[in-house]
Length: 302
View 1 (tube, rainbow, N blue to C red):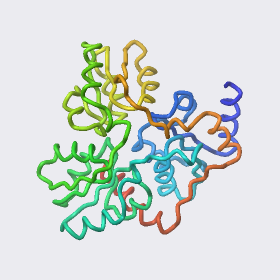
View 2 (spheres, one colour):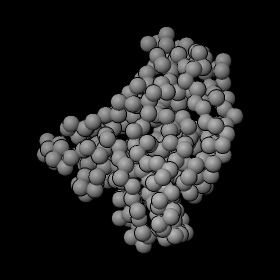
View 3 (cartoon, helix red, strand yellow):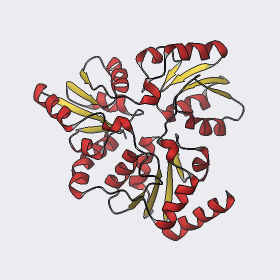
View 4 (tube, one colour):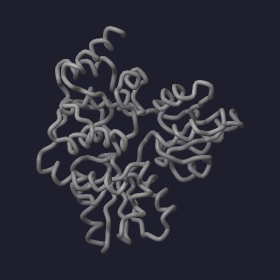
C-alpha cells in the first residue's frame, strides 16, 4: 500500500497532476486525494486549478464535466466503466417534448447527467445549489431532470414556480424505505437522521436535516449532537469519522451502496497516472454547447 501511495505522489509531481475524489469512493482514495468533495466542489476545482492533468475518482459524468470546463487539460478516470445509471434516465426527446409543451421554460439539469443532455439544458445544478439556482431563474416553468426526488424536494421549497419533474432516480437513495429508517432510528433513539435529497419524500419527512453530501458532513461537524444516522452512500463515513472522531455515525440498516463508485481503487489511480489511460473525451461541439449550462451554474451559485 505504501509503495502505491509513494509512486502516486511521485507521478503527480512529474506530470503536474491533481487527484479529485468524490465522497462516495473508498476511503483509501480519499486519503491520498488533493481534493475531496461533492460534484459541485469538484466541478469548481476542475475549472480553477492550474494543474495540467486531472485524475477524477468518481463516475463518468463528473469526468465529462471536468473536461468541459477544462478543455485544455487531460482528464483521466481510474475506471471509465464507472458510470451513473441516473445520468442516462432522460433523453433529448424528453427535453424537446417539454419545450414544445411549455412556454417560459427552463430546463434545469442535475449535474448527474450526460454531456449530451447538458447541451440541451439551460442550467445545471447540484444537490447543494439546486434550490438557490431555481429560485434565481426568471422562468415560471421548470423542467427538472433527471432526478425526480431532488426535483420534488426543490418543488416543495419553491411553490411559486410550476415544476415538471422527470422520473429518474439514484438507486442507492431511491430504494431506501421508511421501514428501514424507522428500524434504525429505533436502535439508535438519540441519533439525528441526516438524509440526502435524492431520497424519496417519505424519507425526507423523517429527517432532522436534509442536504447534499457536503451539507451532511458540515451539519454533523457543527452540531452539538454526538450520534447520527446517515441517509446517503456509505463512502461518506470516511470523511465524517475523520472530521469527528468523537462522534458516532450509523448507516441506515440495509442501505445500498454505489457499485460504480466502488469501481475506483488505489491500484487503478496508479495505473491511470502511470499510463495516462482512461482519458475522458468530449467532442468540441458537445463541449461548447454543454459549457453554457455548467458555467451558468457556477455563475448563479456564487
